[in-house]
Amino acid sequence: MYWTMGMILLVLWCLGLTAGSTEGYWVHLLLLFSMVAFLLAVASHGRRTATS
Image 1 (cartoon, one colour):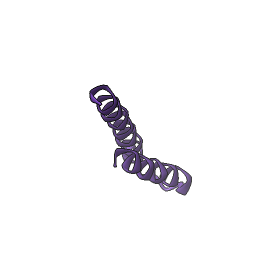
Image 2 (cartoon, rainbow, N blue to C red; image 1 turned 60 degrees about the horizontal axis):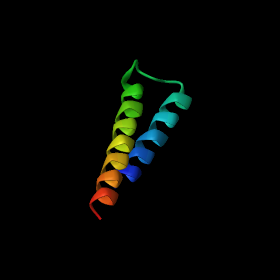
Image 3 (cartoon, helix red, strand yellow; image 1 turned 90 degrees about the vertical axis):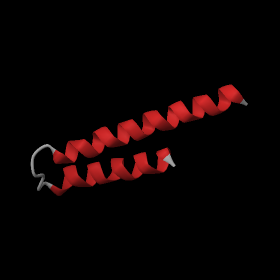
Image 4 (cartoon, rainbow, N blue to C red; image 1 turned 180 degrees about the horizontal axis):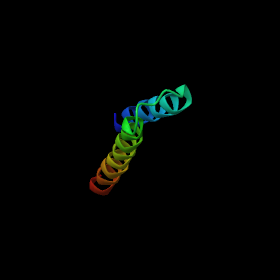
């Protein structure tokens, strides 16, 4: 689930950058949120393999 959310946010960030009509720094929040989602995905995967 986190991988999917991260990929969607990353694609939206790329689209926001290429659109050219960025309204300040808001588009970079998508990048930040996607990186957090990827980190959560890695952390949950590590927790899953460590317990099983």
